[in-house]
Image 1 (tube, rainbow, N blue to C red):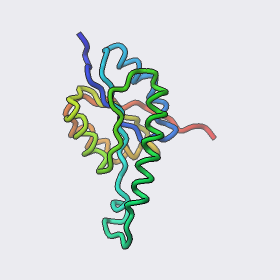
Image 2 (cartoon, rainbow, N blue to C red):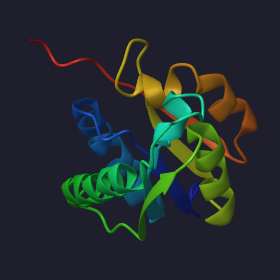
Image 3 (tube, helix red, strand yellow):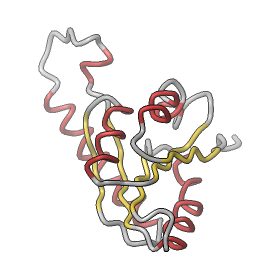
Image 4 (cartoon, one colour):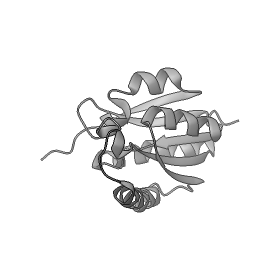
Length: 147
């Protein structure tokens, strides 16, 4: 019997996201799990406190399309069947929780380091993702590429 039958992998699509591939694939394979890969885009209006003097719809659409392309390439690197690829605009931890509930996931996998990149997913939102999650959460330690 599989411990995890439905897994949600939440990624920010930075270079560090690739560090989640091997562990996610191994856990999914060992559990014969359905895998959903999610990328959340914070709306541009969030960055400006919601008070934007121009229409950002075109820019937001371009960001969404770019994210879909990157997510598709990332999903191929997993070398594991991905049941669903989702690019959603909204508040990161809320959308992760909502997707985990909608897909009836029993595990959320996210990357964790404290400075940037995946910190958008787990840095300041770690507490919210962990404590508000409807299932187990695995925070995988990732490291910045050496320059």
